[in-house]
Length: 104
Image 1 (cartoon, helix red, strand yellow):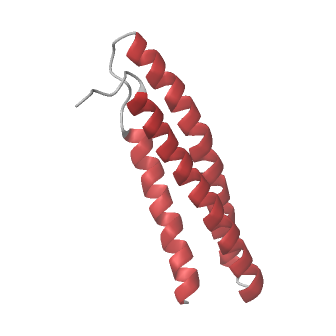
Image 2: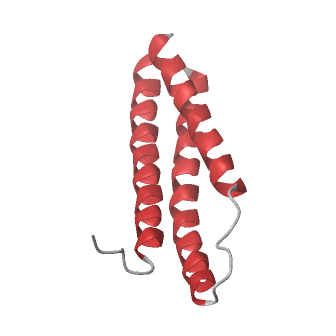
């Protein structure tokens, strides 16, 4: 078995966060469309929150990739998980809002 070249893990993690951001952008579009169909005012807020979160995740993933690449070159720890934990919590919250919109 061959070992992965250095830096591939960082790229895969970045691509996973990009997929998450694109998924959130798709959810924002769907929630926005559902808000227009049902005329639910709080759903507009959920759509806006999902869109802002999607753009934040996309921007953060690029920044994290650069910081992690620099840290690997300098052979120091990459970063803390607090930002990823916060984004994961926010994505779960937006998902719960979208689920509530569908069910209610």
